Length: 90
Image (tube, rainbow, N blue to C red; front, side):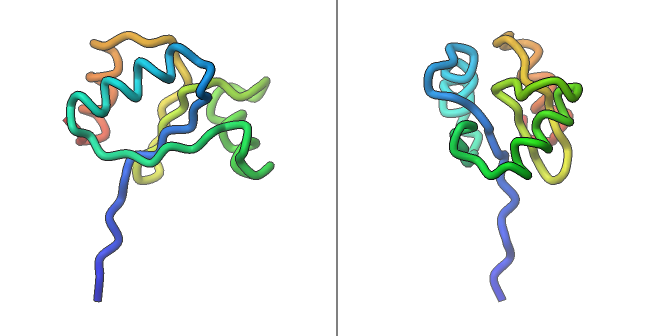
């Protein structure tokens, strides 16, 4: 029986510079992730992301790992690294 690999999910937008920098950071640090274009997600996923980000609108990049969420934030390498450490990914 194959074990499902839990991977970091990145909800982002191609036009978002903070998303681009976050993805570049993940690739450079060899952190595996799945990319989800926010504007192509189902309504229930979008509603969850809105909820995670305070209930007004979706914000990207929003990250999810094993049921733990990171709100969408401007790119800050130290803060991103710290949050990924909390997920157990760094």
